[in-house]
Amino acid sequence: MPIATPEVYAEMLDKAKRDGFAFPAINVTSSQTLNAALRGFAEAESDGIVQVSTGGAEYLSGSTVKDMVVGASALAEYARVVAAKYPVNIALHTDHCPKDKLDGFMRPLIKISQERVARGEEPLFQSHMWDGSAVELHENLDIAAELLEQCAKARIIMEMEIGVVGGEEDGVANEINEKLYTTPGDAIATAEAVGVGEKGRYILAATFGNVHGVYKPGSVKLRPEVLKDIQDAVGAKYGKDKPFDLVFHGGSGSSLEEIREAVSYGVVKMNIDTDTQYAFTRPVADHMLRNYDGVLKVDGEVGNKKQYDPRSWGKAAETAMAARIVEAAENLQSAGKKL
Image 1 (cartoon, rainbow, N blue to C red):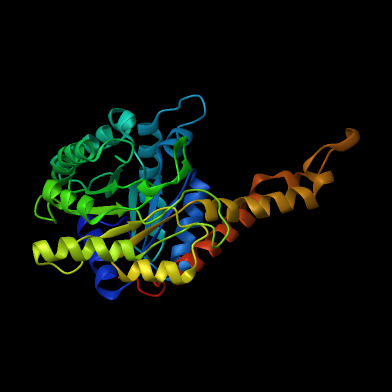
Image 2: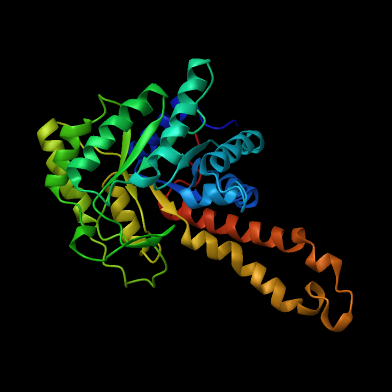
C-alpha cells in the first residue's frame, strides 16, 4: 500500500481510539531501520507510524551536510517508494521539535506540504510534533495554535506536548520531578487554546511520569490514571467522551499492565525508540564478536569479505528490529488490525 493519505491516517487513529488499541510509532535514522520498521508492521499485520527526530533527520542528510529538512525529505521520498511494497498503511511523522528548531525543521516541512497540497499532491508527512515542554504553558499554547492553523492548511495532523517527559533524547534533557505529570488545568487550558478538533486535528502527548531513555521495569513511576483525569475534566466541560487522542512518550521499561491501562484512557500512539535501537544493534555486536578474525584484517591477514560485508550483519539487525516491532504491536494490540 502507499504511504497513508490524510484520510487514511485519520481513519487509522479513529479506529485505534474506537477499538481500544494504539499504534507503535517507530523512530528511524536510516533506510535500513526504515525497512526494518516496515517489515515489522507487515509481519504483525498492523498499520503503523514511522517517525524521525531532529537528530535523526540531520543524520539522514549525511554527517557533513547536517540539514534536518534535507534528511527528513529524503526519508519521506524513499519511504513512498519502498512502503508501496508492503500490505499495511504507514503514516510518516516528525518527532520532538523544540522552539529553537522550529524554523529549521517543522515550519519548512509544513511549508513543503502546503506547496504540495496546492499542486494537488499529498503532504510530505502526515503529522509533525511541536514540543513546547521547555517553555511556559501559555507560550506553548500560543505557538501550538499558530502551528495547528498551518498544519490544517497542509492537511497535516499536529502533535503537541503538555507537561514534561523526563530523561534525555536528542540532546534535550529534562529533570525527573512533578512536572512529569500533566494536570487537568493544563488540559483544559489546552482545549481552550487549540480546541477539541474544530480548529484542526491534533494528538496530545500528555505526561504521566514518562521518562526517555533506558530504565528497568519498575524504575519509572508511571501514573496512567492522570490520563483519565484529564480526559474526564475536559470531557465534562465539552460534552465529549475521551476528547483527546493521546500519545505515550518515554515508554521503555513500562510494564504491559501500565501500557494497556494508558491505552484504555485514549492513547492511540506510543513512541518506541530506545528498545528498537537496542534490538537493531545487539545482533551487530554479536556478529562482530563472533567473527572478530573475519571482520578485521588481523595480523596482516585478509579477513573474510562475507563477514565484513554490511549486508551480512545488516540483515540480522533488520530481522531483530522487526521482531521487536511485532512485539510492540502485540503489546499495544494493533497486531492483526490493519485497515
